Length: 121
Image (tube, rainbow, N blue to C red; front, side, top):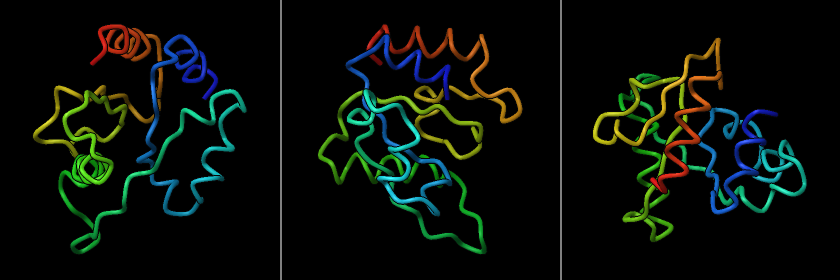
């Protein structure tokens, strides 16, 4: 979280929609409260939770993101996903910055995220 916060502060145009599994147990306000006070207004939503088929649904995370974008009227706006489950993305892998769950936001991922945010896509 400290590293993500540092990056976000360098990109004040960024908005965050949370698609983490944490949204299944924490409310939107509880998720926002995990961030420093000055960044909480940048956390603008959480993706809907897709119905699972036998507990699993391929590309579920991508579908949840697209559903949120559609509902928010932002389907044509640029977006990025930072996720450790790349298998959950099919159509928009070009918008995915895939990290490894045990490394998280390491130097390589930070550089990729900063470059993509700087490019505005």
